[in-house]
Image 1 (cartoon, rainbow, N blue to C red):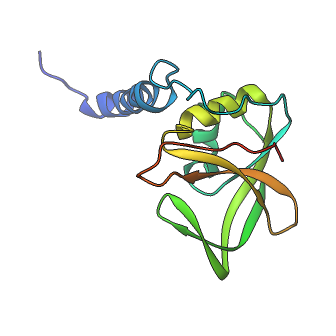
Image 2 (tube, rainbow, N blue to C red):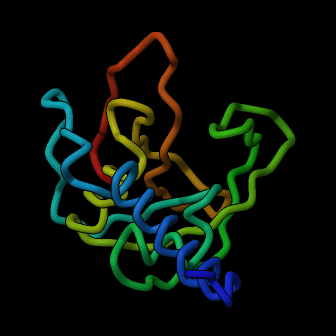
Amino acid sequence: MRLRHPLILVLFGSPLAVGGWLWLTLLSPFTYDRPEHLAPIDEGPHRVYVYGTLRLPPVRWIVIGEAVETRPAYLEDWRRTRLDLEPAPGERVPGAVFTVDAEALARLDRYERLGIRYERVCITLADGSEAWVYRRLPSTSTSASTPASP
């Protein structure tokens, strides 16, 4: 049988392949076990600052399971270095901030692989408010801290 419309296969197959990959690698509850040493998640609300892929509405919707309203936010005296942030006097990182409940924060933790790839820390934004931010763990460490919620 000859495929007459390969474009249809690409249009329908690509999103399914990407969705399957996301489910199997980043979003599945079966591929992430929250490390036992992490503090439990408080009920919330939780403010979260994002500076990478989670700035994109479709990614947030896939990860959290619903649309959330965001507003622009900035980190002063920081710089984005690939997948992380590092202190950098005089520099600024644009991002977005939104508020979620404990269940959505747990989904974000799973996406970021809290305690394995990232730690969640409280940080002060340029407007003086506080929010959670995910920072890469040093490659030699597998520990993470989760201080009191912002």
